[in-house]
Image (tube, rainbow, N blue to C red):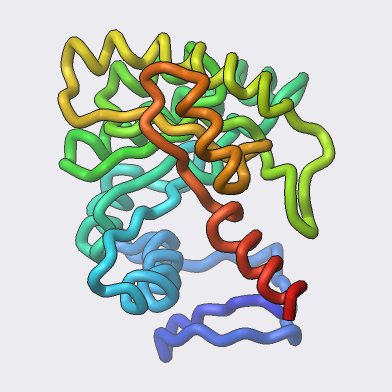
Length: 237
């Protein structure tokens, strides 16, 4: 394991454990340069160039305080991404810390603004929503696919222990769907809603949610589609 480092001179990425952090120094960027170009270059090499024939979404942190969102989204589009998602997201935070973020203007509303800007640029938008209000806010700004997030995945070698049950997920996903569907009927002909994560982690669970809900079109997977199958294959071998 190590740190992924970007060399500004050679414009190459290396991995090293021999790193010194100079926290009292800052980079001097020109007017039209941003630190975001580094992350875009890294993502481009790791993802887009590998799957040239497959649409790729970019995870965009809408609450990043040092990013010019409009400029960054242009970079995302020009790099070859077909859409964006609000990830990392403050939706995974709760309690006092989450409340403090909202009170100081660094909360979920900034993610909604990012999705709205991406939608206006013609990018596919697939935001996570953790409750009815967030789903409504995302629907109002034109989100194409609302992903009803049920928390961290509860299966696998690094599974979360604190999560909602599969039965409870049915009610929570349905509540989000009920907020989303009126907007779908009024304005968007190609929108959809999907369940995600928490206990929704395998074929059985993915099949279970749409059968028990109305207006849910499928499942959205991350670790359930990339990590868990690999873990099972390794365990069997």
